[in-house]
Length: 106
Image 1 (cartoon, rainbow, N blue to C red):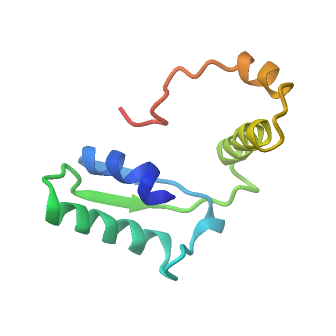
Image 2 (image 1 turned 90 degrees about the horizontal axis):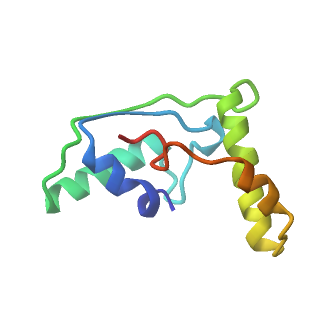
């Protein structure tokens, strides 16, 4: 999932500060997230020219970080809409118009 959603964005930018929830430390291969992402960048660099020179990962605890709580809430709304075909979710999603659709990537 991380590779599919983030790798192209991570390769485009010179310096990345990535702040995931501390609960997502392990990925399927058993590595921690930082080692996994750096490995994915290294593999991509072997095949393509990439801009990325540094990737800093600082996990945050979602219990104390309001931004991660909001992202979890918003992701839950989207999941509920498609998992349960709940059309009531549209009223919540219509109230929020994202000003930056690239999730902080610019």
